[in-house]
Image 1 (tube, rainbow, N blue to C red):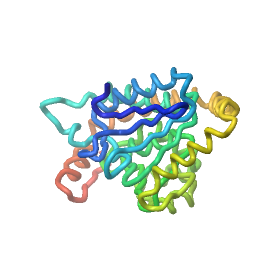
Image 2: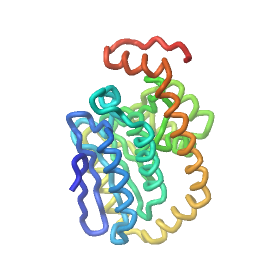
Image 3: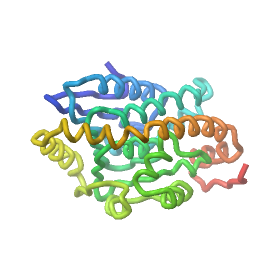
Image 4: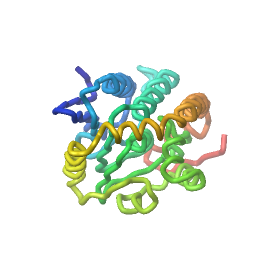
Length: 259
């Protein structure tokens, strides 16, 4: 059904797997579109009460596909991409399911925004989490500003976004970025065990509490997504962004000019 995703259902549990392992599950236009459509369809599935997210291969997701951004044969449509990532963020935040992210390897940029949109985050010890848009002269998108602020507060969120600092599992838990740390290679087993415990819980009550807690924040998320889309489009045209992606491809340190 999907080119870049695998969706599996077993009873009341659904598993969504990002499936571009050769590209470390970096998100191109096709994956963004499929994620938006898939998550919106899961929202409508009343038989599902728990949704698990994971990445195939070596990572959860390395974020946006920078090579796709540089493909002159198929120009990257930033406005379309922003529409998809906004839909992904809103679908996750308003989903009538308990969402669990299982992180191994990298969860960077847009990949981390997606992780932070989930209710429960389990990261392996050696996973690498970074809100590292700054490295290519961009701002967080996919609700990254909103979800990071929700997790760690505004002052810490600014520092994490501006530095692009990489956190391993235990460091991430210490600052409240993730909920549980699993041993290397056991992230998925831990997430599945968590899901099985939820199956024995009064899930209807838990989902109702989630809806109540999120209800008043939805308008703020919508506003932030709108501002992210507008500003990301502007950042894509900056000298610093061009330098950032060229430096990334050339594997050198960027020389930013603040323009």
